[in-house]
Amino acid sequence: MSFSGKVLLVDDEAHIRKFIGLLLKQLGSPTVIEAGNGEDAVATFKQEKPDLVLLDINMPGLTGLETLRLLKQEDPDCVVVMLTSLASRQVVEESLSLGAAGYIRKDTPKEEITRMLGETIASCFGNEGTTP
Image (cartoon, rainbow, N blue to C red; front, side):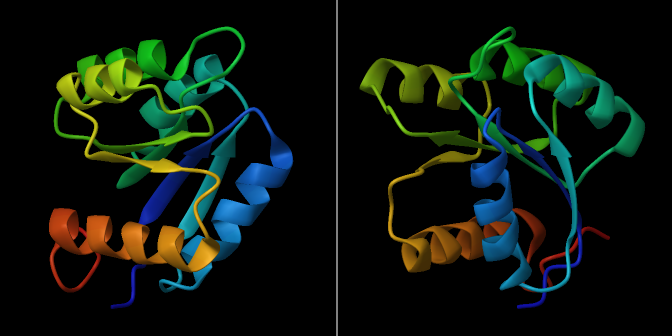
């Protein structure tokens, strides 16, 4: 697979954005756009129309769940994968019920994160890993 779509990576921690961005590059040549909070994520989403959003659950200001709700209002078909370091069952279930395509724990080994991202991209965008 060679994913060349546009990804909006939302996390309030710059080192996490850098880490996940490097893992995405292993899946192809995506365009990675970053946002450090929910408010910036919503504005960037409206402007950039990304193929995939990777969204931190725990952020100051708009939380990941609040941001997810706003993104889904803007585009009900957007593909959002939640990122979390603290995955309570209730929060995970709520994010999935709001339309998240899945979730990834940030403390998962990097090879497993890469595999999970690849599987999500393949299931959401087909074998090509890109949108039509």
